[in-house]
Length: 209
Image (tube, rainbow, N blue to C red; front, side, top):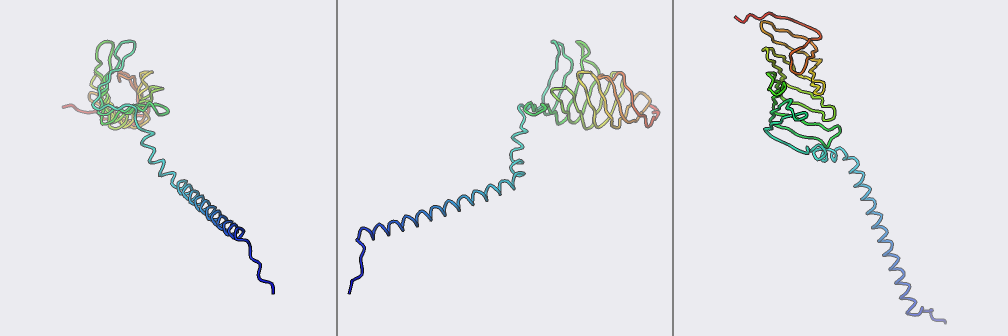
């Protein structure tokens, strides 16, 4: 009777070693597959949370280059002062497109007439200056007073600083000596000396006595 054939001891060891290495390789491949699946899941989760990421990044994108509080700013042209602004808050967003300056917390604008300070004064809650066009949007309790004692009141006023022109398509109220005029739409020179209301809606005679 023939005895069972035995593999040489070295061959038996190599076979077991080969099986062990194959198992390790399979285990590592499984690890890579699971890791890749987790990465895809995380990426998908991040993709779904894009709005959250944008909200987190937004304050950094909109952060002003410069900020001043209780600021006094004098604008000049060729060495000649043309206007002076006092504002509780001034933020320069020159890093935005288009670049702009925000004035908040109340502002007071005084114009120069040559070397002398004009009697025209403009006050408001906020203002937004487009630095490229020099167009200002002035909002909230806007009041313009001139040297004749007249006042114009509105909630939104545009000031084209290059053209030295004020205008709005919103409701306005103009107070003059003995008269109160309301209307829709308005334009004037920036010192509020010459003006017109586009659509007069009412006129009331005021008795000072």
